Length: 365
Image (cartoon, rainbow, N blue to C red; front, side, top):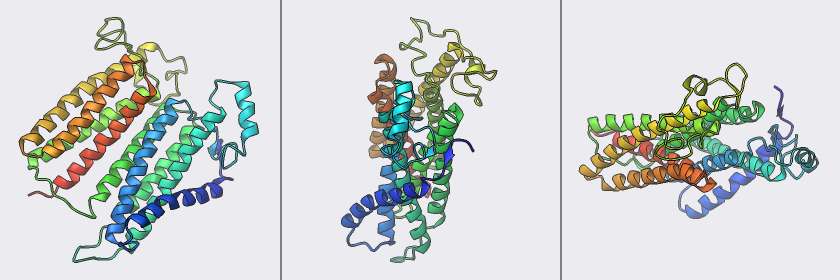
């Protein structure tokens, strides 16, 4: 396929292993009393990988927000090299031709740093899978299922494929959105996996567990809408709040064009320029979804507090407040990058917390 250059792949894999050794060294120093491959060690490695995956998701947003997604226009290397230093002549030529274009020295380093971090996470997940299959029963506890880390490994490989397609298909909106969703899915898989090593029960009734699942699905759908807003650069399609355009609550919209999923960036299904009304439709849909999700989360927060789960109530309430404030700041403050990154981080935190709560509450009879 055009755009794929596998020549630097071996160097990148070696670099991923070297980078992955740094957090492993930290884990070894922190858990000196735990044998490598033990239940406690696997839990520590899972939590460490979860933390780095969260960083990867936020840095992926930074890559997108700085328009660095094509900072290296091939994959997996940069102009066939494992790092931008070796490709400085090609990058300089592209930057000279288009000083504000997709390829600059700064953007190349941002893009490759994202790939290095992704490789490090992939290496740690490979270790999780390897030691997951070698784990044994401990202290009367059953052996943790190795299928969790196996599924996680398959998932990260698919996520890597979408990362490659993001570059080779030139920021195709559907592919970029799926890349974001698979990244968040990886975060949720690791969060769920971390619970199997030290099971903790949160007392939830069957009705509340069903409500929790419904809220989780609503948040996931809203995150997908947010990804569609971001990948289509529709954040400022409505430039004021609570109205959309100069006091208009419902300006002209084109939902058909806005939600045609299989099309290139900035064009409609027929290949013409995507109308501004389509971007407005995308933005308004996300606003309506935000209202629905906020109400659903407030109901969940209230219900958790009512049954004495105040710690979970406060956690979800705090992240919800972060999401509302950062979402408003994107519009009111004209999309500052800090607010946009906080919004992505908040989405990841919400999905992680809801996933952990579902895992801990699933066993109550």
